[in-house]
Amino acid sequence: MATLVDYKKARFNYEILETFEAGIELLGYEVKSLKKGHGSLEGSHVVVRGGEAFAVNVLVPPYQEKNTPKEYDPRRNRKLLLNKKELQKLASMEEGKGLTVVPISIYNKGPLVKVSVAVVRGKKRFDKRATTMKREGDREAERAMKDR
Image: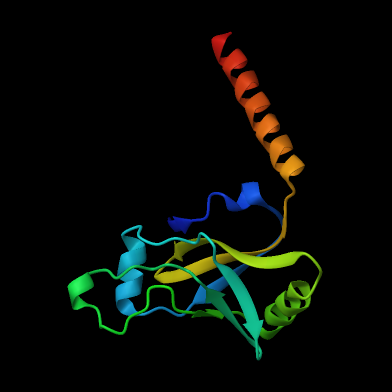
């Protein structure tokens, strides 16, 4: 299970409440581009409309720019493949106050490309400061243990 694209700041910017695994509908050259490590999840989110989930604003640049169709949009909406129970749960959580559904990573699972999707709540500034202070404290403790 190799991670192709990761949204590293998600754990810093958001409090992750629940995660789901979903398939994603991609074109052949998009898969090739992702396997090369190209792409970004910055600023993307998931929308549930009409019983279907879509990843909005996920950047997948063309694999070979000159060989892709002229009408190709690298930030097009991509359909997520979830079962009905997961879709209903996401839709109900999406309606909750202050909750957002965000893709966290895109990875390989065998021959398939999967997306890790999380229901998140945005962190306040003081929460982010606390996270930074905890991380620095852990680093200092690790350095102290290493010096022994």
